[in-house]
Length: 142
Image 1 (cartoon, rainbow, N blue to C red):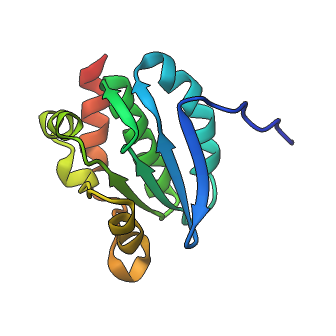
Image 2 (image 1 turned 60 degrees about the vertical axis):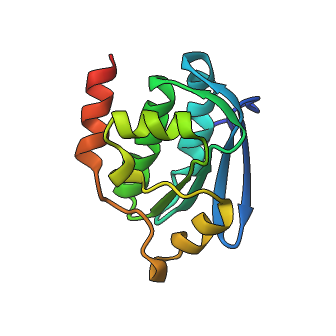
């Protein structure tokens, strides 16, 4: 059964580089943004063994809805034996990741170049590490 592609999203730019999919989040990532981003995120994390970088560089605000998006991506990519790398250069977002005990799960880096270097299997990007922490963060946020 064929589905229509998701509508364009003002909070997300998706592109491919060096064999990886980059999900570049923009602006304030709150509940309204998460609702718009989810369909695109699901399409981008659907292939087997996806290599995905989520870039939070253009993000100005991130709340628990944003953390839930990150955990959703992590679960979907892990289930497909892929690699995920998070670009998170902003101290407020890093503090939120630390408070949710997700820094070991995502091991954020400061630049997209670092993320792309980590994504390739020989570099050991983030795979199934920390799935239980994502589930716990999701359960505690609602």
